[in-house]
Image (cartoon, rainbow, N blue to C red; front, side, top):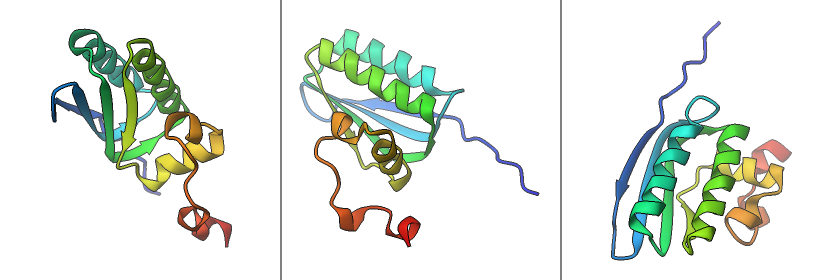
Length: 123
């Protein structure tokens, strides 16, 4: 039996253009790491007051319910500060969680087209 070995969450912040803040996420966004994202995002929102906050999710390996709760909390902080939250380069595992939890439209916008949804899990 192979044990599951969690990946630490690595965050990289940059400013791709004036008024924008990009946070690249790599690893696992879960119960043990979600607080790191919240702390970094809230501090960055307060320090930099971006008009747009881009979370680059391309490096995420997993996202559990704690990670989802933090994404919703980050959105609340961004909205309260007048920033728009963007979840970019989402892996299928994140889109699936957002759809199953009913939060896709709230966090991302309109639902993904049916053809791009989990056809392999529906077969």
